[in-house]
Amino acid sequence: MPPGPTTGTPPTDASWPTPPAPNVLIPPRPTSRSPKALIISLIVLGLLGMLGVGGFILYSRPNPGYGDALVNYRETRPEILTREHVMGDINYPVTPPVGGNHHPMWQSCMGDVYDERIPDEHAVHSLEHGAVWITYDPERVTADDIRLLAERVEGIDFMMLSPYPGQESPISLQAWGYQLRVATATDERIDRFIQDYRITASIEAGAACSAGVNITGTTPLDLY
View 1: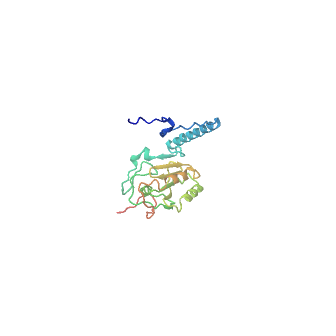
View 2: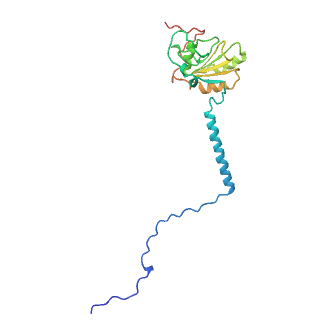
View 3: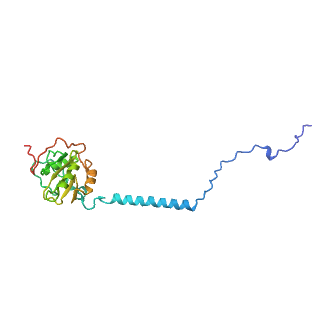
């Protein structure tokens, strides 16, 4: 007879290989935050929000720190800031002028302090190069005012100072497209204007203030 089936103990569940456990992601247990920590977080977020709003207001406000004393002609009257080289007298719509057509030669602006008026046409060319031109009405300022203005100019490149009789304010500062009018030489906005616009207002990058003319008066130099 053929042998019968083998008899024995049937396999149990423990005798079979255990399949690998699936990758199960167990979410981390949320940590509780104390009321004190929550309050501190809210305060910090509030301060950051205030700083953000404050910064937006500061930089969106026109001429921050100058009030109404500063005029930005680049925004209000850009049409007057033409740049052609012109010989002869030029009638500027703003006095002292802040830009526009000008003489081919610029006025020396290497920290020059002029005791007499200088021609507008040469001064405007200096503004194009990045100079700050400080002017004053000699009838409306003191000797101390002139001394304080000269100290800000003398020996500093891209700066020049000259009288300008009959101008609207006792003291006026010009850069290309910008003008600041103040009453006294102790006005802190003078230093701020110089810091903000000296060289940086140039629309002819790299142009020099040296090798300019040093003439005085109101008649521009005749090159022909």
